[in-house]
Image (cartoon, rainbow, N blue to C red):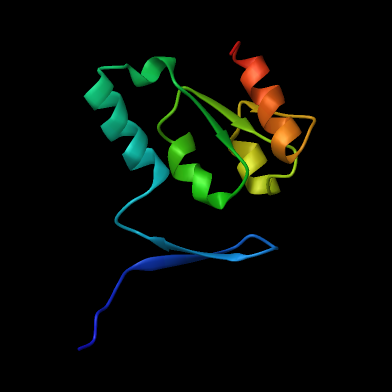
Length: 97
């Protein structure tokens, strides 16, 4: 039996990520927001790689950590000065959490 899947291959520079094109972080956020009855107009997304761009398309405020690729940073409303975990903490502080 041969199964064909529509996938996207992302090279992070460290690992390869295979993503099923039928699902993404943006779709998940929309679904969760509907279930929780929360408006996306008050949402923020924190990203560090290409697989976060679908999330960025759905949120009201986009944050990229410093180690994100340049094209991800260009999509962000704010780019952290710190990378990885410290960048995440900076992002959370930026949105007041």
